[in-house]
Length: 174
Length: 57
Image 1 (cartoon, rainbow over the protein chains, first blue to last red):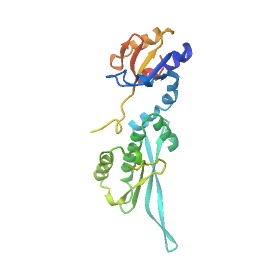
Image 2: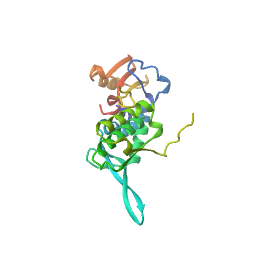
Image 3: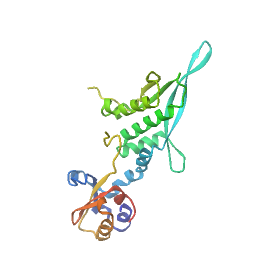
Image 4: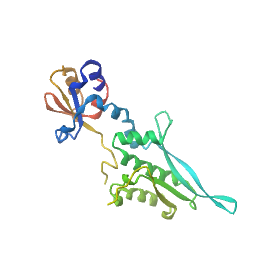
């Protein structure tokens, strides 16, 4: 529809706003010209990445230096998206698209769960560092519950798991 | 239990066609879609699922 309007009509005469079917007029005051949805449309692929967990986990070793030697003490789990052709989607592109679509919470959750699934193959004597966006934890006891449940289901020892707060978002103090 | 944050729902939009344009092709396009993907608010305002708004007619 957006393409048709832009090609054949005056886009300034067509407006849209995100809304619920049950109350389609509730958000009417936020209406924007239809062409302003192009960025959101271009980012809509993120929904499929989240829905299908098209995510790959890279294991970055965390090394401790001991008496001149070194030992792997754990792995930081780094999430990358995978597009339909199997190409890697870099994290900045992944999270930019999620931000535009207001899907940051959902993407963070999908990354966390996929990371835990993939971590089940790691040695049980190593730590697992999982990043999360602190502002993506909407209701902590609920939002992390599914992550803890998966950790338990996969027989990963809770003492292996370290949640690492990402510093990209500012957390407001209450 | 899942909320929209955990499992994102498909988005929907209210679209409005100003009366200085011929919106008939767009209205026909919307009306040709499955009934569970759109609804008419009035003759120039419709609620549509995102796929109807974003993709080609």
